[in-house]
Image (cartoon, rainbow, N blue to C red):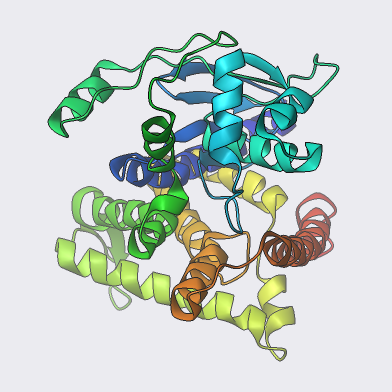
Length: 369
């Protein structure tokens, strides 16, 4: 029972912090008119959810982390056959990859690349697990009242209602393709892309600041006079609470920077914790009361925000650096190079994860740390 409560505490704490983090990406992407096809709590995999507009909201089977699938974030140049492939699928409603290749006069590989990119855009639906072959379909799509009002404000016609897998005649394929393209992350100017990337960590830091103000300026804290031993319950001005928050953020930045210093990396890792330690500390924070829980979540939110700013793909900070590089060099980073960088980054984090999990098991389970 104690183990289940520990897991539940971790799920609640991490789930909330991941929710607001991904919510930052989601809100800014939608504010810039970018489609978000999924908003999930948990790692990618089997999930349950509900469709709301063009976004599916839900939870996955592995409740660690989360993601907002912002459309059009695939690296590299666009396929030159996107419009032709899109037109083929919409004319058929349900189309085999080979049919699309034949319609467009291209190879199967070229058709596959174009169709998979359209899947990332949310323009077509990819093959189901039950499909024997590569089958692509027109997605189900119905504009919400908000999307209709938004289109009217911009002097545009709201997109048509689509029925999944049913043919749809495109009266103006060029205009429809441009409409789809302008709902993609890659269509935005660099500064808007950077805002979307920084919004997640920014919301984590904002939550921490609000929590610090609540703790120090609203709830208050106990202060003991070292000479008389008398205990006072005090509150401070909000600006002083914010100042304390910035001091703590600076401390976390300094600690994280220790990972890049060979002389301090071992000490930094030793003072860090994995999901096992977070679970144990989350349960202790719940048992200590609301103020302690809020304080713990604020500190964890700062760590989550700062870690995501590390210049290592696939973290937000890594993508930010890639965007800056592309802007300066005026050259796209290829899909292969981006994949290599992401694999290297994931390998580094898996190594740190294994080391920190081992020390947490020794520390919290066996008491050997």
